[in-house]
Image (cartoon, rainbow, N blue to C red; front, top):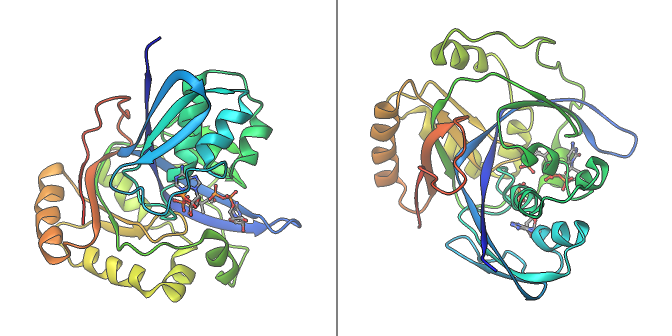
Amino acid sequence: MSATDVFAPAKINLTLHVTGQRDDGYHLLDSLVVFAPVGDRLRLTPDGALSLQVDGPEAAGVPSDGSNLVLRAARMAGQESGQITLTKQLPASAGIGGGSSDAAAVLRALGRDVPPEQIAQLGADVPMCMKPRPQRVQGIGEQLSVAAIPSLPALLVNPRVSVPTPSVFKALRDKTNPPMPETLPKFADRSDCIDWLATQRNDLQVPAMMLTPAVGVVLEALHTLPGTRLARMSGSGATCFALFDDTEAMRFAEISLRAAHPDWWIASGLLGDQVQKSAPSMATQEA
Ligand SMILES: C[C@@](CO)(OP(=O)(O)O)[C@H](O)COP(=O)(O)OP(=O)(O)OC[C@H]1O[C@@H](n2ccc(N)nc2=O)[C@H](O)[C@@H]1O
Ligand SMILES: Nc1ncnc2c1ncn2[C@@H]1O[C@H](COP(=O)(O)OP(=O)(O)O)[C@@H](O)[C@H]1O
C-alpha cells in the first residue's frame, strides 16, 4: 500500500484576547487565527507496528515517544499500526501550534470520526487546527467560527528561545480583558484589515516579553523594518509576525532581517491563503 503525505501548517494568532478564567484554571480566549504556508510534514506508511520517527531542521528536543502529540492522536483514532515520519520545520514551544497542527494533520489523514471533546483533550489548539482556515476561536479554544480575512503578506520570526505556554498564562496579571467586537468588520481590502488588526491585541505579549526579553528584541526589529504595517506576537510566543502591504515589501524586509539576524528562524509568505496540502510556498531558513 502507498504512503500518505500530510501538511501541518503553522497557526498564527493575529489577535489573542484573554477574556476570563475558568474555575479549572483554563483561560477564555477570543482570537482571530490564520494558517501559514510553512509547516511540518508527515508521512504515514501502513506497514508494521505503530511507530514514530522525527526528523527535519527543527527536530531537536521534540519527543519521539508516546508523549508526541502525533502518536497520542493516532492512538486516540484507534490506529495500532503504521510508521509515521514527522519532519519538523516549525520550532517547538513557539506559539505557532506545531504539535497541535501535527496532531490535527494525523487525525485528518486517518479520517476517523473522533468526537470534538476528545480532540480537545489533546490540547486547546488542536480543534482549530483540524480545518486550517481563517477562523475566530472562543471558549478555551473549542468554539470555532469561520472568518473572512484577506491574504496577508507576513514574516514569521522566532528568536530560537522556547516559551512554555503555562508560564505565560500564569504571568498575565489581568485575566479579564475586552473581547473583539461581537461582529467582526467586513474588510474592504488587505490594508483595511491590517488597520483594524492594529486596534486589537495579544494580551499574552506583555507577560511573554517580561519572561522572555528576546520577544521584545524581535518586535523591535520587526517594527524598524521598511514597510512593516503591524508587528505582534503569536500565541504565547516567542514567534512574532510582521504584516506588509504586498509581497514585494515583505521580501525586501526579509532580506534585511536575514542579514541582521542569521541565527533567527525566519519564514515568509501569505497568511490566510488557502493552505496547500503538498506544495507550501513559504520560504524558511535554518540557522
Ligand atoms: C496560547 C495558545 C493560543 O492559540 O497557543 P500556543 O501559544 O500554545 O501556540 C493556545 O491557547 C494554547 O493551546 P495549547 O498549547 O494546545 O494548550 P494546552 O496544551 O491545552 O494547554 C497548555 C497550558 O496552557 C494554559 N492554557 C491553555 C489554553 C487556554 N485556553 N487556557 C490556558 O490557561 C494552561 O495552563 C494549560 O495547562
Ligand atoms: N509533534 C510535536 N511537535 C512539537 N512538540 C511536540 C510534539 N508533540 C509533543 N510536543 C511537546 O509539546 C510542547 C509544545 O509544543 P508546540 O505544540 O510546538 O508548542 P506551541 O503550541 O507553543 O507552538 C513541546 O515542548 C514538546 O515537548
